[in-house]
Amino acid sequence: MVLLKPLKKWVDLQYQSPSGILGLYFGEKMVLQHQPETLWTIELLKLRHEERVLEIGCGAGYAIKKVLLHPHVQFVAGLDISTSVLRSAKLRNRQSLRKGTAEVLLGNVSDIPLDNESFTKVFSIHSLYFWDVSSQTVSELYRVLKPNGTVTLTICNGKDGETWTGVQSMVEELLIPLMIQTGFKDVKIVKGPSSRGYHTIAVGGGK
Image 1 (cartoon, rainbow, N blue to C red):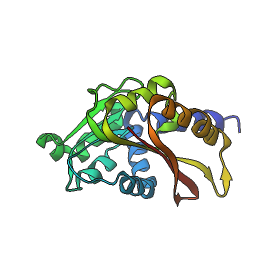
Image 2: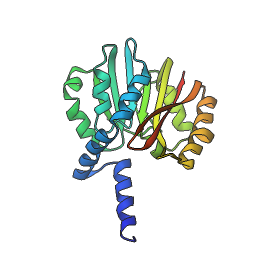
Image 3: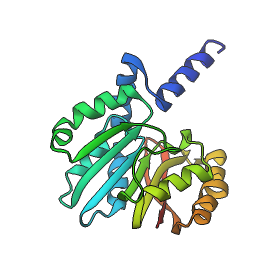
Image 4: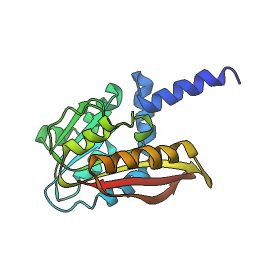
């Protein structure tokens, strides 16, 4: 059991910020694991016209590729803290990168390296757990959104009928109050599909 603790810590770090050759493996593993939540989240975006989309924690770029298939999407940017998975994202979306309809960037949600009011939609899938959920972070999401834009943050809050009280508390007692305080409108939680026994929710709001 003692030996398993360092191993679990290392695996958790790979999920947070994949690195090295094994980081490429973890990036692709997450693509397969998170397909149900990814497709559901893209549906929630309700992509309609002349959309400019930002994904926070884009990983290996699967969601970017799926969003770019939508006829009303003009441009998609992906942000991640891992250079390893960004290599995969660039490879997966190389044609769109060449055409200028996609961009992938190294960076952190607390200091997004993009201009004010650049995006109609901002979303993330399973990256919120690793954020410093603060007024600075929520303000950054608000800053890069265009007026009437929306943010959609997808996570799991439990498994096999059990609610993770830590995650639920973070959402209800920290994230949502900060979003309302920052100026987000119609902030709500939407229940999503069960994936591998995990309970999926999305926290959404508009500018």
